[in-house]
Image (cartoon, rainbow over all chains, first blue to last red; front, side, top):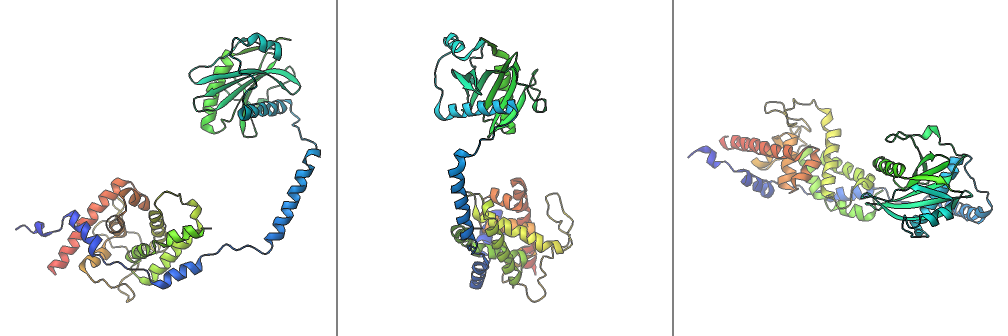
Length: 232
Length: 170
């Protein structure tokens, strides 16, 4: 008989290893040593007064908050972006005030907002139109149009009279053939650009690197197909 | 810092870890140090453990990495073949010399043969065949592709068979 036939097959060898190889149980002292060497969470003696003091400061701050003057950004663009982001966040939380369907609502929207839309992006397979409504931001009447993408991201377009608004060069990004500014505020991203004397904003919570790439596509769709004009 | 529940779950694998440490370091004192260091690291970095993944494999991985860091680094590395395992004629790893009187005694040919295998072969057989870890987990412990694990198991068994054959003829 060939000698190779006496040798264990892979499976047999595996079974021998599992069944015959001596196991070495851990000595009892090792478990004790590990448990004793493990640092236990211990509250430092100085922690209690520190926590108490911090809590007191927080309560006082909350009480004083209404009388502390609000710090508003000096840059008009930052102020506009903050207002637009607040409007976007309000819509996210409580929905649009009006659920009008474009273009039926356009005359009413123009009348209420002071912004006419000679052309408007009404959505496509990626961005679905949700609603359009007049807004009042930074003491200006304007128009807001809300969209939602297939992943559930809310995207808000806002147009406001913006004769005195200058798009910051430092934040400009080349997107397709446009150079809008990308401004971030409170965890939201906003494209800022001018269309004549109208300041335009497109806001979303798409802030990660991948999301911004998609947000660029949304900007191009809205930018290419929306033409706001002052109607006052 | 690890919470009590995590510590309890981790300590349930103490015997398996100690057994693995014994076959890696070959000396009870080193095995105890190795296991103790493994648990200290596991508790310190418990926040990095992803719940739902294999805790035992994670602990084996820490233990092996600790072994490689603190024990094997002292020794001169042997020439490495394509799959990361020393060639047959290369000197065995001197992870812990077993002829200085403190090494564990081998009672069977199988155990003796296992002790003579290079660390990569010993580890792959211990994890896959003795501890029954899935190949994907073994690959994670050894930080190599599953294909490499399969190849190492095959070669480890070949070499184990050759060693057993030597013992038979003697």
